[in-house]
Length: 365
Image (cartoon, rainbow, N blue to C red; front, side, top):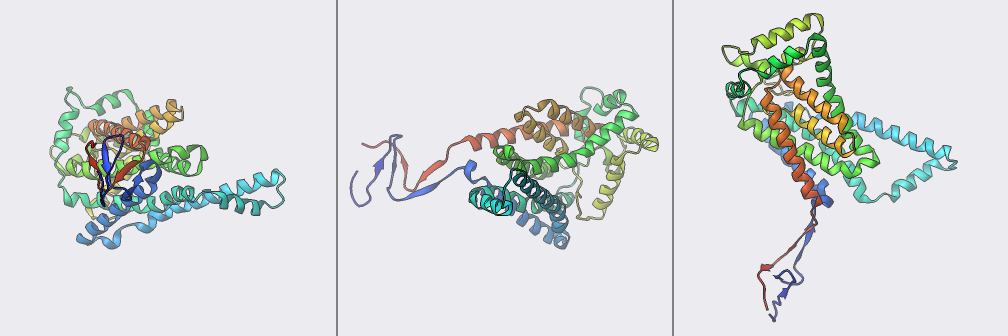
């Protein structure tokens, strides 16, 4: 086909107009930009929701930046000192100059892949906390009775099994592991940023991390609003989880359980509509289980699954044993997280998609 609007045929049978090619997009190459768009969208939406409920001034941007950037800065300084020490031990006469030269030799893309997560993770978690706090006003909690019936489909409740097998000492251990989650999540994120050998896993972990919070604990949580066993009696009667909470309170008298104090604090914040660090009440799905699944999947890639899978199992047990979640919450979280992880992995493996303006999917002679 000839003329001023000359059309070229490709071997794939696609016809395109020369000179009108749109740059290729590859999530593998442009994941920091995609991550930025996700976080920016979440932050704008959270600010708009908070403003409509009169809570815009309460979004905890500062506290999240503090607890995120303070350790990031400390690790960066420690890394720098260790690097300078290594150069001096190797006999380098100008360690600072050599370090500056090394930093100048790093590609701009490497800096983007490092600093984008450093900048966006704190506002992302602050905006997510805001969504979770407002969720009780957006979607009325009403799914707990159904989740209770699903858990008891076999004629017993999962917590009855865990408490029959795990005594007071074991409960204390489970409680400790459950709260160790907060530290391990931070360790995972810091390791992804600072350990060179984990750079190849950075896009997979960070995108999966963010997408799990967005899809599972925003959209799905609004679709299936529930408060969880520990708060069941505050909204429903009879309180079918009174026996579980009584067992935990008895153990707490001799072996203090931080879970009970945190549960009381979260409900107080919820009743006051307070937006604060970690505030918000939502049972389905369990983000403890979801992020523990990501940790296990990462450790499996590093051939450390023998650590990751038992940790995930303990988090699943703890979520039920301590009254935070229904067993079905954890099941949905594992399945949803695996689906997101595999979808992100597939997108990261794909080659750039070439888009050509004016292309026509038809063979021409």
